[in-house]
Every structure is written in C-alpha cells, then in structure tokens.
Image 1 (cartoon, rainbow, N blue to C red):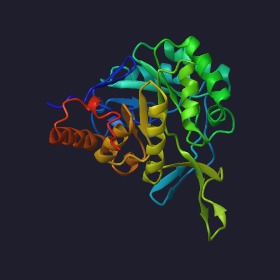
Image 2 (image 1 turned 60 degrees about the vertical axis):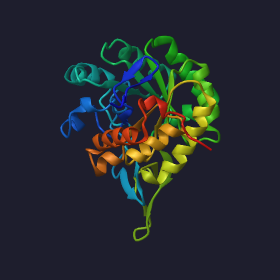
Image 3 (image 1 turned 45 degrees about the vertical axis):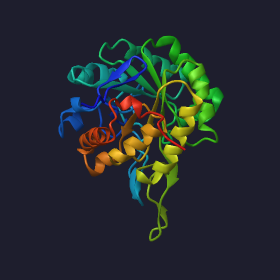
Amino acid sequence: MADLSTNIHHLHLKNPVMLASGTCGFAEEINDFFDISAVGGVFLKGTTLRNRDGNAYPRMAETASGMLNAVGLQNKGIDYFIEQIYPRIRDYDTALIVNVNGSTIEEYIEVTEKVNSLDRIPAIELNISCPNVKEGGMAFGITCQGAEAVTRAVRRVYDKTLIVKLSPNVTDVAEIARAVVAEGADSVSLVNTFLGMAIDPETRKPLLSTVTGGLSGPAIMPIALRMVWQVAQAVNVPVIGLGGIMDAADVIRFLLAGATAVQVGTVLFKDPLSPLKMIDGLKEYMNRHGVDAVRELTGGLQW
C-alpha cells in the first residue's frame, strides 16, 4: 500500500496535499464540503494583530486561466481567532497552520507569540509576500535584508515549525530562500501570487479597486514550478510548492521538481473536492509506477 506520509521539519503530514491560505477560510468553511481530516494540512486564512477590513470592492476578477485577487488580508485579528475560531477547529485531525502577517516586525512578533501558545497549532507560515497590502507584506519579502530581519525576529520567539512564504515578485527567489533559511526558517513555501492587473476596455477602468492584485491559477503554474525547482536546489530544508495546481499530475510535477508537499488554492473555487481527487490520483500513480513512499518522488526529476 502506498505510503503518502511526509514531514516538514517536525510537522508530520498524512499526505502531501494541503490547502493554501486565503482559499479555505479557517478550515470550517471547506469542512462543509468534505472531511478536512483527509488532507495533509490546512494553511488558515491570513491573520494579523488587529482587525482588517481588507480592500474595497471589487477585489476579485477572473482572468484567462486564472484569477486576480486583492482581498487585502481581511480578518478579525489574532485575539478573535484565539477566542472564537480556535476552540471550534482545534480538534480537527489534520495539521492546522496559521498564516502570520504584519505591517511591522513588531506586529509579526506579537502575532507569533500569541500563536506559539496554542497547543494544537504545530507550525506557522510567515507571510512576507502578500502583494495586496500597502504596508508590510511583500515589502519584507522582496529584499534579502527585509526577509532576514523579519525571519530572525520571529525565530527568536517561536519554537515550533517555521515556514516562510516567499514572493515570486523578485529577481532571484533562491537568494531570498537562502537568506531566510540562514536566519532559522525550517521550511519555505512558494510561490505567492504574481502582481498583475486587468482592465475593462468598455469602461476603461481597472477591474480591481486597487488597480493591481495577485494572479493565481493555472496560468502561473509553469513559472511557480520553475521557482520551486530552483529553490529546492538552493536550500537544504523542505520546500512546499504552490501555484496553479489543478490535479494529481500537477502535484506530482511539483514533487519531482523538489517539493516535499504542496498547497492547492484557486482550484477550490472551481471544484472544492479537488484535493480528494488529487490524493486518489497520487495513490494511483504511485501504485502504477511501483513507488512505495511519496517521499521517493521529491526531487526525482530526471534530465
């Protein structure tokens, strides 16, 4: 029987298919469609120190083979999460990972310290790559100095598995990956969305209130795959791949490129049951190719 289990540092996953932050709320929403315990993990919606209303509408737009979003990290803040949401989801039988955001390093630290006290949250995803906020976010992730500073500060106050989410909107993503690993990151996840825009030719206006937003979906998959491959060769920590994954074949592509696990997101808007189909397809592939453990696929690209 195919062994789908894998590890991200001290984080043990029953399978490598996880749900990307911002696409499945705080796990309860997607649990209405299928048993959340079936997936390897859930990256919860981006969480900040205080309430954020997000950007003005419209903040989502469909594009060719993808979508743009400019939600802007709408959430009610870490205290609300701890008091109202965490008690309802803490017993879900899957890895729950908080996506931590801040406008300043001090905010990142404060949110992290609060999450560190939650016994059923075994990891955080440090988001230094969101393109849809005016302060913080991607500003930290586009230079080595910024990425190093926030990773170093968070590492000092966090003693569980630290995953840093990288921006693709950089010249050399492998350089940023090496920088955060040197400051204590246990894993890196990539890629976040690409900065893009859409225009309505009839009104001559942008389709998003913010003019630009984050592009996700199958349109970005080949670029994301290339970046994961580059980073996997540059660092010696587990890499989590994401960006336009639509089916089991895409999961396998990211694993072969060097990913230990993957996140799926935009596809959930098209088919909420797609993660289950990916897991079944991965099992079928492993049985057909005589692969005993999914870990054997990681970095298996031949050229």
